Amino acid sequence: MSRFAEEVEKFQEVEPTYVRGVVSGFRDGLGKDQLFSWAPVLKLCQWVVDQPVEPGERGNAFERDRGWGWTRKAIADLLEDALQPGNTQIPFELRQEAWKVLLPLTSDSDPMPSDETDEDGSEPEAVSINTTRGEAMHALVRYALWVKEHLEKASDGSSNRKASFDNMPEVREVLETHLDPDRDPSLAIRSVYGRWLPWLILLDPQWVRENLAKILPTDPALARFRDAAWDTYVIFSQVYNDAVDLLQEEYVRAAAGVGEMAPKRRDPADPADHLAEHLMVLYWRGRIERDGPELSQFYANSSDDVCGHAMWFVGRVFANGEEEPPAEIIARLKGMWDRRMDLLRTEPERHRKEIEQFGSWFASGRFGDEWSLVNLQESLRLVGSAEPDSLVMAQLVKWTPLRPTEVLVCVRLMVEGADELWKIEAWRGEIREIVSIAVQAGGPARDTAAVLVNVLAARGHLEFMDLLPGPSKSD
Image (cartoon, rainbow, N blue to C red; front, side, top):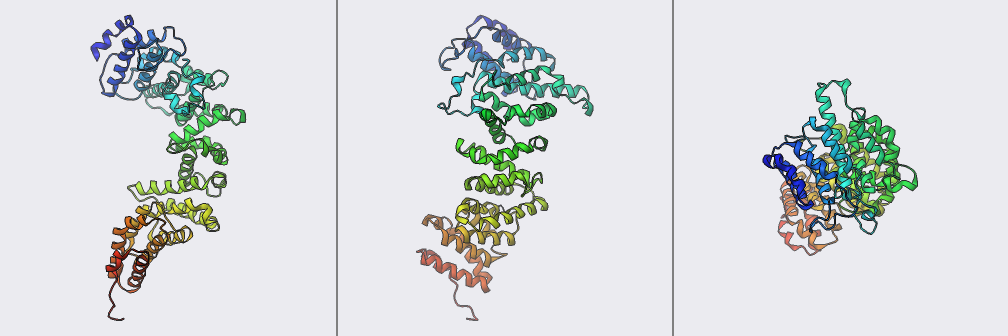
């Protein structure tokens, strides 16, 4: 790889297809942690971006390149990877050379308006990573983070020497240029701002504050630009506290419009579902309150499916944690569920999905056996089911030795609410284990186990009859 780098300028003499292959080869080398001299590679790249290019000349990727379009895309891909931290990162002393390659790519004609039609069906963020200008804009943020890292390292991490766009005006100029919809009407480019919004805040929070109305415009005529940025943000970004400080009003606005989000796209990248996830994280971190505008608007405008996703997400996150969550977080979440149930129990069929997803909270095992069993029983009485039912059954087995009678009541309610025969078949092992433990416990648990076995038998599941306890000595 190093030998090729030293001789790479000779590829100026060959046609674009082979130059693209060489550029892609260097990118592959980065993934294998291979070191090479960046100066000649950047020189070849600059030569390529200086070549004339006609819109649409990329053509079919499986044919011989008709021009330099595909090679320009390969260079954007290379820069995006080469500016990330690591042993193969471009040396900072080549900042000017890297910028001379990157800047022309940020104004590439690809994507063209015809690449972003409604008929095409491609989401803006997908277009952004599969087009030259889109990938160059991703690389632009990488470039800014690269500059910030090295400038702050040179200042020995002094807190009063934090880098901002004042130290990289070239980045600020490009970002502001592409925020003008008259100059760049691409939704793919606007999605880049959403994808990198937390990092833009890290780079220069004041710049984001001053330009937030352009990144997320409120003018209905510009709604598609806002949606491209915001939807990408909630789908691809985690919840960062620094970002929340600037985006509080945006969360309120998004929650008020969540009902309009859902029809746009579905699983696995539904912005309404991801907004629900963000709000749940903000709530348990104490950044928003259950009666605050964010959650009030969210629950007032969300479908039952989206509300159910919010509850499922909480259960999944807490089930996957290795450590016990702080007591104050558990208390906040219990308070949220109790408040939700004040509403849900009045119209259970309207909120079936949300009530069913209490099962995910129960299955996590994080909310205490007494509170969890009481609320599982109520949920089952309201809608007859809890999801995911297999995980609910597994958790019921764990709590049978502690609270056999309450567990048996939950199992009976699940059996009575089962709308498919195969469900009881799927639960057979757990039911047998639960009943066996209850019979051994004796007393009320033994009698409740007998009731459950008879309920199962009445539904045609005679295979549980051998679990029926014989008469006790006191009978």
